Length: 201
Image (tube, rainbow, N blue to C red):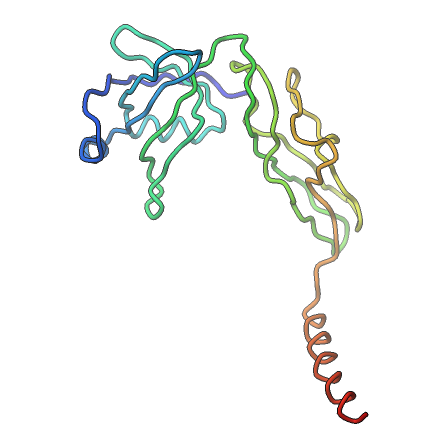
């Protein structure tokens, strides 16, 4: 489960692209808090502390500014396409005991049997859980699984209190034999022979 992380924010008083650039140049991140039917609140977050906090999937954040303190989850993180630095964060207000839906990463562990390999079809699962008890990820083991083995979303054990929203029949991982280098060559050879046979007729 992700721990609660505190971020000391400041009320945002300047808006527009120029103001956002100045904020980022000062090592800070523009953000907006929304949810529970309230008006959006624009704040500025500390750059480094926010970046470290958001390395945790579904991190529960306590945003403190002026005399306010709110629990929130990052619902949308905008990054620079080249530098991958955080440019803006949308924060969803949550309350203790409230259930929210989130995506959690699926981590595959173990080695399949013999020369087989595993292919991961889904990298995340959509679940519902209490905002203050969100799992960071789930693990699925492929240890000693043989060719043809499949693992669906419904077969993965979720932490207590979590409800699967992804289709239980959705394929997450399957085990197969790796393609050999000869296979594409054989296909090309067959394609080259076909026109020759047709001309002979």
